[in-house]
Amino acid sequence: MIVSLSLKNFGLFKDANVDFHEKLNVITGESGAGKSMFISAINAFLTGNIPQNLRTDEGNISAFFIVDDEIRDLIKDDFNLDSEELVISSTFTSKRAFFRINGTIVPKELIQKIGKHLIEVHSQDSNILLRDESYQSKLIYSLLRDKKPELFSHYDDYFKEYSSLKSKFEHIPSDPSEIFRKLDILNYQIEEIERLNPVIGEDDELNDRYKALNNVEEIRKNLYEDLNILKDNEEFNLDIAIGNVVYNLSKISDFGFKEYYEQALNIQELLNDLHGNLEYKLEDLNVDPNELQQVGDRLNEIINLKRKYGPSLEDVILKLENMKKEYEYLSELKDEIDLIEPKLKELKKKLKQESNNIIKKSIDYLNSLKKSIEKNLYDLNMKNASIDFRFSDKEPDNTSAHKAILLLKTTPQSPFLNLSEIASGGEMSRILLAMETVFGNDHSIDTMLFDEIDSGVGPRMADVVGEKLEELSKNKQVIVITHMPQVANDANRHFKILKIEKNAKTYSSIIRLNSDERDKEIKDMYGDIVL
Image (spheres, rainbow, N blue to C red):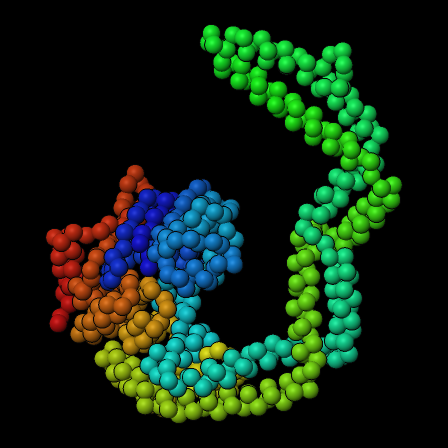
């Protein structure tokens, strides 16, 4: 749902802030006050478009939403949203506009992707998700699965098997001999790596050893010099020197020098350890003359493996595991290649049968949905309106093997039409209100904005529209722009858009009405209406 909206230098709005209620929000205002600009501001977050005529030298719009896991999953490949809080903002000038999500600049396409799932705007020329046939099908089957889950058990089992086989089938090349060629290549590559049996870190050890063997004389010379300095030079060495220090400090250790005496002993021990280690390294230099060749050959083999399958030994070993899995997969595929296509056809037939069975066993429930929606349409003064569900074959997916769409006609003699073919405006808004009230939480959009929903209706019908909106707000956040007091009367929160004249200029402002202000606004709206 939308929590708040902020506008700065957007059209006639210089500085406006709105905190929405989670249920029914009503917005009123005189003609020309800026209601259409308000809708344009919300549409900017849904379409990624800020109308050129509403931009100023520098402006900003920002909306704060609370979203669910479905929204986070929708954009997880494009943006890491790690909480339920989503802030979409745009800074714009007369020439350009930038959109941000939680402070990070994002492309316009991401705003468009997420926008239609945040708020559904029912107004002239709005892009309504319920008009989308693929969404209609998803919604209808979501309702069926919720109400009759037992009907889908066989279908889901068949589809799981069908999906697995189809994935295998799609990996079969047009020329089946390609599988055998790929198996031969994989077999060679696997054997090449396993024959050398590389160990992680081996390349670094080999490289160090190769450098050492290649520089053995230089190393030997330096080690001899170091050993002489430490202990082997009979005239003077560090061992003699530190021995003298230890001896001298031992004689005065009882006079406050015990700590320094112990330090000297530690240094003497460290020098002895260092001497022993360097002696060991010097002896180790007496190596097999063939070792340099062996280490060099092994190092070249490892480097070649890394070049072909790396770049690191970790990558080589990971590549080996992946190649083994692919080899196993292709070996199974080779044995099943003649069986997959007939099995797919058989499963597809079963899926169609199960899908038909689901539709047949759902007729009563679908009829009850139709009656509920048609009752709402009747209440909304569309007394001759009828709806229907039409099913057609499609490629099986995890939902169904049929596509379901909503059809509607507004007069007995007119044909059933898809929602996308019905004129927009007040009539379309009432049609969708009738459906939204029935679908409730099964429709995934959390926030509905209605404009012109009471267009062309009389005072008595406005009461019914208000009741339906209040009913819808039990499950959804609803924002309504209205000129009918009967609708405004049911609001949980009432806002008014004002037109302000100041310094020979016109501005728009939106304020939240308190109880007294609301009573006055509704009274003014009634005016001379005859009930």
